[in-house]
Amino acid sequence: MEPIRITRDYFEAWNRHDPAAIAALFAEGGTYRDPAVGAGLTGAAIADYAGGLFAGFPDLRFEVLGAGSGEDGIVAAQWLMHGTNTGSLAGKPATGRAISLPGADFITVTDEKIRSVEGYFDQKTMAKQLGLQVLVQPHVLDALAFGSASRMDNGKRTKPGAIVLTWIQVNSELEAHEIRHRAMRIIDEITTMPGFLSYAGFGVGERLFTVTAWEDPESPRQLVRGGEHRQVMQKAMGPEFSAAFHTSVWVPHHLNPMWVRCTACGRMAEFERLEGQCECGEPLPEHPPYW
Image (tube, rainbow, N blue to C red; front, side):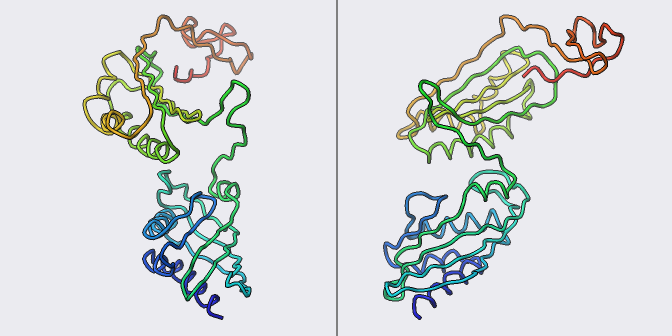
């Protein structure tokens, strides 16, 4: 019954939210692995991972539905992980959603210590329960590469006087994770800067892009005067971080008219030329931001 007792202690440590106690149950060199971490964690990294989950789910608890031990010291434990995502999780903002995630652990116990934990759960189910989008697409299809994107604007309908394009090519998923985490802080900073209009960010393979729109070419200079954006640039210029990066400021050659659809007659209309009123005589909907 020793492996079952150790397994019980293991889940009790999780439910007490005690990262140090969780890590202490592992043998020296013992490993933890689940779909979210990829390569096995050892030692203090196990405690750090647990602490990150507790930060994201302050009410996290495991409901063990059943556990059985074989002659080889491997315990199979079926569980439900309950919790509400009210804190930042892996650099992402809280969703406020509650989850009840089914999963299983295969725990190998030797000499009253955990030699390994192999955890299994469906990441797609977890993402859906958190209210996140789940996209299924290839990384590459012939010469076409795929990625993901995000966008925000401050609601201004000013024509942009400058577009800033920045990209950084990372060496690993760990670097990509750090860039995405820092991007959230950069967005918080630039939304308060005079002249800022909108932001779009997207990643394709190892290359991460940001595109920002500004009222004039001088406003983007704020990005290099200090703050998180400048810190990222300095780190990219230093040793052993990123493979390449590039920044540029583009001034529009010309901007075509904004066309919107009239909700009364259904026709597309040139908003500025008609001064917001359709040729049918009805007012046009307010046009969206240019970027």
